[in-house]
Length: 128
Image (cartoon, rainbow, N blue to C red; front, side, top):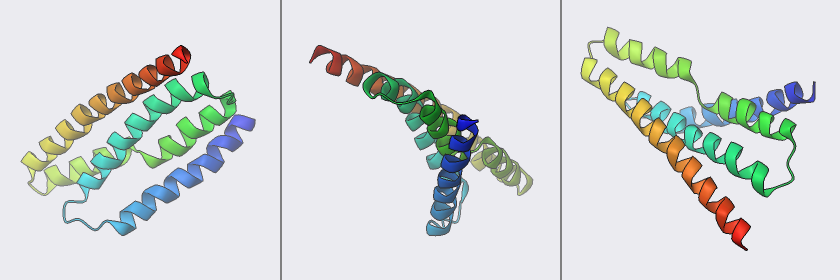
């Protein structure tokens, strides 16, 4: 039950942060903000679940709250899908493909980068 409460609390923070960014950034091509949010979230998720438990005495409940709640509510596959569909429906096939390529390609690279950085930082810390 603690994990559920952690997800709820962190989910409110992540969702609120995402909405704040949506209100702050008013780009004509709104989907680019979703790409940035999702790529950033992918990096953070990989980093958080790899490094934090290795470096800090942090509970599994807190890790779950941060990963599922905070990062999960900050990023969203449904928004990516909806915005891609809207681009296709409006005749912007090239932008739709750019959205798919940027989201998936950069997301994968960000996940790899987060994992590599956290692994490196763990090794540096272990050597000290």
